[in-house]
Amino acid sequence: MNLNTLRLFVAIIQQGSLSKASEHTGVPIATISRQIANLEKELNIQLFDRQKSGVKPTTQGQLFYEQVHLNIDNLLHIERTLHDHKHALSGVLRVSMPIGIDSIWNVLMAFGQRYPNVAIHCQATERTIDLVADGIDVAFRMGELKTDSVIATPVAYARAVWVASPELIARLGTPTTPDDLLHYPCASFGKSGEQSIAFEWQDGKCQVPCVFVSNDNSAIVHWAKMGQAVCLMMDNTAQSLIEQGQAVQVLADYPSIRFPINALYLAHRHRSAVVKSFIEFVKEVGGWV
Image 1 (cartoon, rainbow, N blue to C red):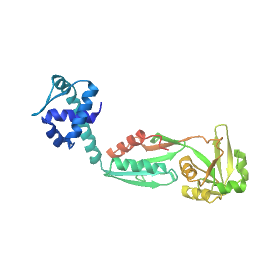
Image 2 (tube, rainbow, N blue to C red):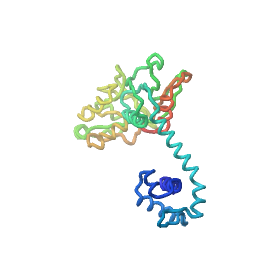
Image 3 (cartoon, helix red, strand yellow):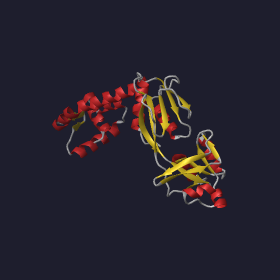
Image 4 (cartoon, rainbow, N blue to C red):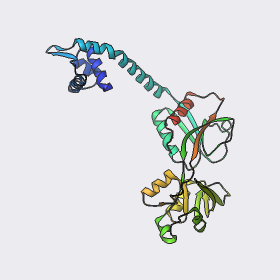
């Protein structure tokens, strides 16, 4: 049963005529008539007596109205409350996120669309931060965490994949096992000073030497596109390159272990309405990577 149709039905009885219901709802009379006819067909009852002087609810129509109008009024009240909350919520949300998890941008944009009066300040960094000293409301971090001072809520899981450009594969061949990577130039997301990265899959792990390591995801993408290395990157980033024909996945038979992305916030700090709404939002859209 269509909620909008029920709203039109209630409007006809409360306004007293089709024309006034049309003025009240902004819906053309012809559309209202068609919707009511469909409702009568669905219920298999006649809701209105149609006369030259106007429409009048039948006994069954009046009974149906008494059953539904309070529920419709309550739903409209809830709708208005949510609309007012959406536009009343305002302030600043300060977020910290790791470099390279591009899908977090989509979450922030979606939150901004739902709450247009909230300004979002985002700090992208890999360093360890102090939520209080750095003035951060919510921080996203990857991997397992060891902390008692904050609440860590898993909001998504991520996986890294190996990709290479068609040109590199044509030049060097396709690696078929993780050990083969020892004979290829490799690049990966990592911290300054790292010369190799640990690659872990379901049945094993190995240390892969890298000719290029960066904390900038776009740098790894560039190396992959230019055919300079076999590159380890987030699966959502890799998928975009694969769809564009700029890379192919290698070692698909050795999927990496998934790792959690957590939203961190202080356990005992008073949280504003903006922060509470954002935490609820990321839980609602969990699994976005």
